Length: 314
Ligand code: ZN
Image 1 (cartoon, rainbow, N blue to C red):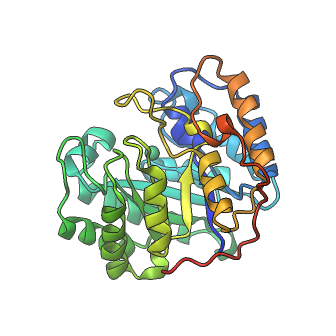
Image 2 (cartoon, helix red, strand yellow; image 1 turned 180 degrees about the vertical axis):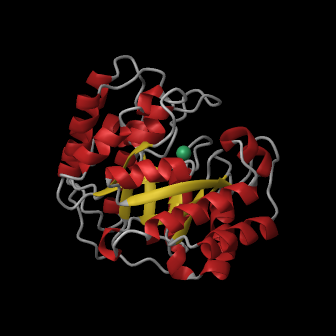
Image 3 (cartoon, rainbow, N blue to C red; image 1 turned 90 degrees about the vertical axis):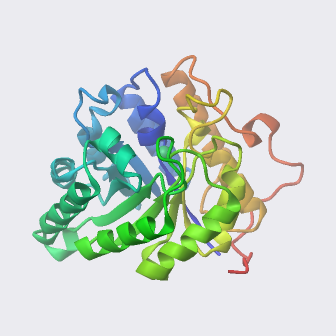
């Protein structure tokens, strides 16, 4: 079995850090992680620079990351405007977040569900104008899927209907996102089954998890056992969680890679090389806490990386 670790630190991590990382340091980070065997990196977000000055150089970062052989360059796009910039920059994968909580959607993107679906349709229109071999992969991400800080739990029927509408709008795939860190292994199993029931197994393969309440890796295991094979994570859990001091933001890439390799699941990642990438981020963001257990404790004595021989009962 093989799992794709999708590194989201340069986007999700950095957007939650007040300091701005230099463009050169971002490039060094991305290059070093790709060298360590990470095959997909979300390198930024095409939001207005005045909203997120930390990510103002996303277009330049995309052009740079595209020169790294074998790397899938992913970006977040809040709307069709951002998608147009992302396409111009040459991103391989675009993710449009759709908050299943309409209150959260209005607060965050200032758009109703209907308006976000309309943006998705516009983005699909732009992608279809491109020659077939130049079209980026387009994912609609169901954010706050496991609950919203404003609305609480979101009804299944609403989540299922929005997943269906994203696919009808022409998305290649939908993703599940635990924006608030509310997920637990049972709710992960439940939502994967619900959404796959609507869009088909091959149209939901990835999940974005946060470790706000310490359940991140348990949720990963539930996701893998439910058949997903793409897991978002952030180096050093960068960005933390403003509501939970001591908790990382996203699940920690190093701990995730260690867990998978220890289980015999192939990641393609060289753990020692991956751990060494932390020094680049530490040097570029002095004083910013980085999280992770395996890098503090070290690998177990006699630990060797496995070769993908494990099978999970799906
Ligand atoms: Zn996130």
